[in-house]
Image (cartoon, rainbow, N blue to C red):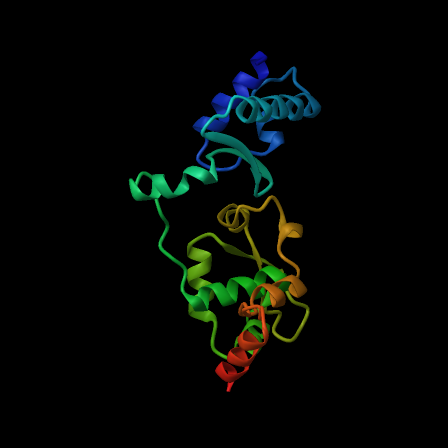
Length: 194
């Protein structure tokens, strides 16, 4: 590994959040953004080729060194990772609405969900998952909300374009149906549906 890759490795290891290429470029004034990207690729290849238990992951607009998913269960069993409190179903519904509709106002969120959203919006803001992105031109100029880089980090996504499309979600959310292998199985399946 070259010295720039080693420097980036040390910075990513020390960082508690994803670090952007621009932030990494401040580590070495002689390095261009292309040099930083090449050094990140070299570091990523090093971890992949040598079979390390960690990897360089691009998420939330930056890069971070994370343990590989294959070791997640063991790390969780040993309680070595810090967990954020779980999100309630109301928080998840509101967060999904904001993620797919942003920028979106409270009234539209409440219309979609059918319940008041003020408390949930406040909780999501306190957790740093959403932020005020501006004001609507509508009556009263209500606040508009959008997701934050922490939201992307939580989902492990590099950017919002990687969110599943709505048509993919409808397929993924359908319950699995057993496949009939013969006439007896098909009859049993039909009888079970009644």
